[in-house]
Image (cartoon, rainbow, N blue to C red):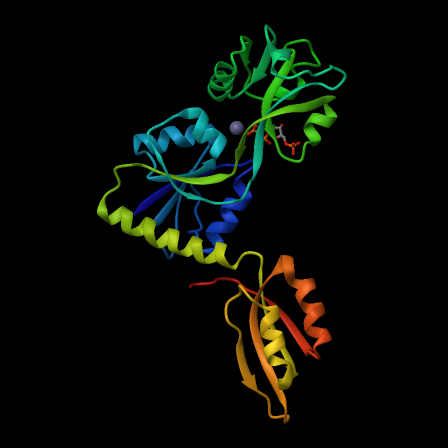
Amino acid sequence: MLRIAIQTKGRLHEETMQLLAETGIKLEQSKRLLLIPARNFPIEILFLRDDDIPQSVADGVADIGIVGENEYAEKQKNVRIAKRLGFSRCRLSLAIPKEEEYDGMAWFEGKVIATSYPGILRDYLDKQGIRADIHVITGSVEIAPGIGLADAIFDIVSSGSTLVTNHLKEVEVVMQSEAVLIANPHLSEEKLAILDELLFRMEAVQQAEGKKYVLLNLPTVNLDQVIEILPGMKSPTIMPLAKEGWSSLHVVVDEKRFWDIIGKLKALGAESILVMPIEKMIP
Ligand code: PRP
Ligand code: ZN
């Protein structure tokens, strides 16, 4: 049995639960809210505050955990990143009142900066040779300048709307962050095998992301030209149609390039184009 720590609520919760569902893991209906076993996979889920996840994985209270890279970097615990997950992307930035004139890092010399990430901030300031006062606040950091508690803040920025609402502007991006799967460095063989299976399933879900399965019919004489439009993609499957001189083509297309490619295919006589979502892809 492998125990995974995930956030009770907040930024990562929804997307983590969705990822687990996509890997086919179904949870037991349970009255206990803190620790819920899966019905069909040897894993149990421990719900924690994100701030506590790196420590609990380092201690072995949980074997693995899903947490923002920002928390992982701040807590400096003895855990390893087993996989970068690519969701909950955000950045950790310095922000100052928007009417301030900003002339580079020197602005922060002697200033008071409010943050929940003192470790990452201290490191950054030291590297830049800036002496500033760090005030640790655990929630609503963004209101600190407005109420005279600090001159600036260092916090998570995602859409940027929290900064706008609080009349702040982002002036330095210190680190990029995304959800990561962290693991205790001393897992047993048995637990490592379960982790491997979990990683394999996550990989299949990630591979399929942003990809579409496209089926279409086209005149066989244009096949070579069509295949030229599709370089770099998984080789297409081609089948003859009952209708003389026509073929059916199946191909996996990157969603980003979809409209571009479909336009060209239509110009080459493609018809009956079907576009379907892909749930999982196993290479
Ligand atoms: C973070 C951060 C800001 C907000 C920024 O809080 O403290 O309040 O997100 O997001 P935005 O740029 O999209 O407005 P979060 O909701 O992650 O809660 P937490 O800091 O308490 O974990
Ligand atoms: Zn938090």
